[in-house]
Image (cartoon, rainbow, N blue to C red; front, side, top):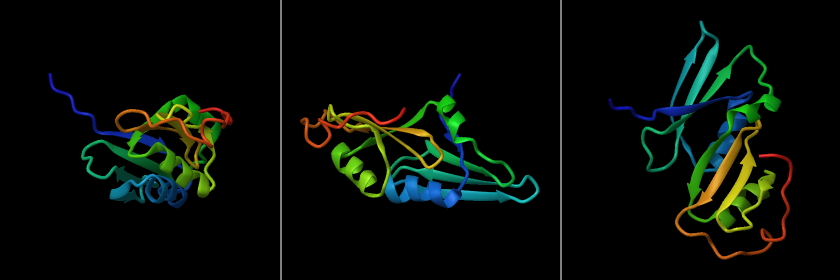
Amino acid sequence: MKINYLHTMVRVSDIEASKAFYCALLGLTESRRSENAQGRYTLVFLTAPGEGGADLELTYNWDEKVDGASARNFGHLAYAVENIYEMCARLQAAGVTINRPPRDGRMAFVKSPDGISVELLQMGPALPAAEPWVSMGNTGSW
């Protein structure tokens, strides 16, 4: 029996804020979008460059309030990045809290505007330990 991974769905409270995080900051691109007026929802599919078929589906239910506190039950999304230090610096400069800094040169955690945990992993071997990340403590949960 064959099985293919299709996508991960997360509920969001603001499509534009979520797109700013996932697209402008993390580098994903919108691959397709659908709006259903009768069902009162919007679906936006995002894809990492060069990746096909492993989309992130942002679901916005027009009349529903998303409770960011329950987002922790989801677990996390994970993306490999070319340079974890550069990505974390970019996110931090945009006001994103680095919940688990990449002290080991390999792994970090941040959260989306809706409280979804996003794990960032260094592509290939870990980078050499570097400041300010080595001395930075954890913030909140991830």
